[in-house]
Image 1 (cartoon, rainbow, N blue to C red):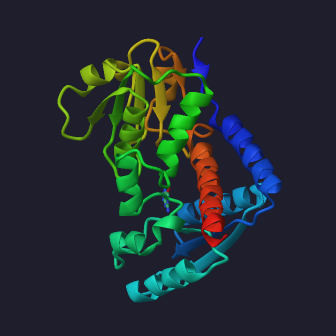
Image 2 (spheres, rainbow, N blue to C red):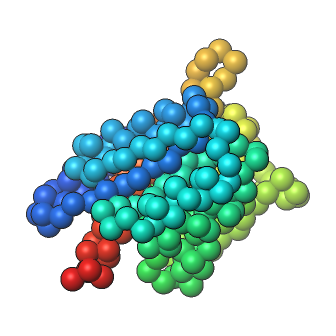
Length: 282
Ligand code: GUN
């Protein structure tokens, strides 16, 4: 029987734990989210984050800015939030309009408030396995595997995709868990053969149903990071779920796999940032 890695259920448990932790600590935590423009997908993501904050007990400020805002204008908003003592975490929803330099925006966020884990200081901390703030999707994948009792140490892990947000950081986290890690990308030769080596296959390529059973070793654990709406309006991942679930040992569904874990890890980062902020003040 193929095991379904139920991210929705595990994320609900984590949010429950964080809610209890926040109550026990009698501490306030505040997340400020900046949404630029009115991209429908981004609006849904920001709304999901806001609802998760409400559930856990984190105060959530959503700052909506027009897509005509200048780079300097956006940086000014970030500077204000960096200085505000009542704000623990800052997140700028991506993608940003093409007129804005995304890297400059990421670097403007105080690393201590960077709950996305995208600032170069946090990226460096991850690379050296020091305590920073971890990017949410990669951290969510590791948490999903651990809470599903899937052993990582010593396993062959293949990561499809080399983005700064998922591919590269998840590869580093798997390495810190003592896996043997291969990163593949659009120029990789013999992709099916390399994927066939994987005990754990992480797919983050942004192409609907691109990975079928030819890429999967029987019994492998398959983690699908993609989320798309196909031409029939159905939500699907980067993995052809029906084809792959027949041979995988365990697989994440889409939706209900990695997505909810990303939000749970964002909530966790908010609590970590708030805790560190409070300990600096005391
Ligand atoms: N857009 C898509 N995923 C993300 C994410 O993890 N963080 C932010 N800030 N924007 C995103």
